Length: 291
Ligand code: FES
Image 1 (tube, rainbow, N blue to C red):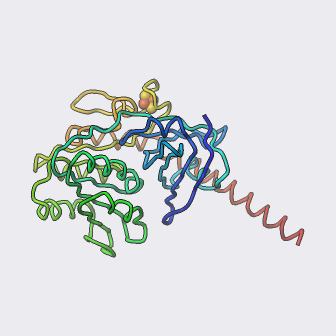
Image 2 (image 1 turned 135 degrees about the vertical axis):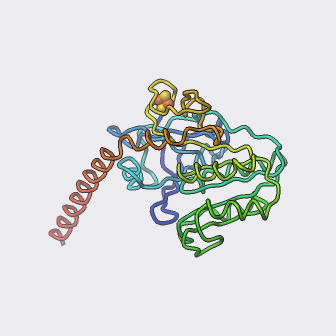
Image 3 (image 1 turned 90 degrees about the horizontal axis):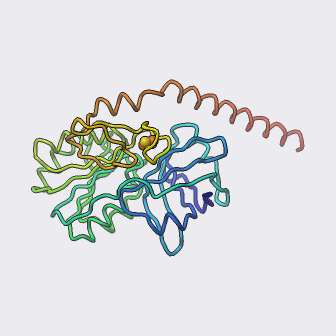
């Protein structure tokens, strides 16, 4: 189905909040699930983690970084425009139980995507400890919204401009020491962050979920592009995941597969950008000539 764009705003540099009219998805969405969007008729299918939804209003929200051709196209669309296709909800919902204290970490788009998880873990009776990781303070977003549903929130910035200085690798031991007992951990964001976090909780024997963001094509278990290895078994992130035991994921394979089309993606991105810049230049010239 198509999806009318209600909001498409850049919340911090290079990160957008997209609100779409998608009543059928909003009615069935569960924490941990994702959608796929095809921005236009010649576009590819791109997965996005659901960051919020409103079943009554029939709307869904995702956050995305402009990182390739499709997200660049999306970034140029405005409220009132329509995305060619939106499909979902996809993937298995996150298992929400009362574990005790849950550490919930997000980076990149994960700063938005951990919100429904935080809400659900809280409603299930857990103490929820949030962790937001970013390079610097001015690209941290969604903080206020998360504070409404977490018991404690740690900000971690690479340059130390807010919260704990460093990467999640440096911050995790400090947070674990301060919090004492963590019963369950869940991470959403870039692959490196999820790998480092999973490796950080392993010696403490904290059950840890990583929400894998692999390359995907169909998102329904047919193409095999999203395959990963978990506990030595091949699994499909789109239908068996996206949640997997972070201690059992073959991270080397995840990285290798994610890098498979980097050269082609970069080329396509540069080509598309040149085309766009050329079109903008043409428009400017035409406007100047009219003036
Ligand atoms: Fe095709 Fe998962 S994306 S099998």
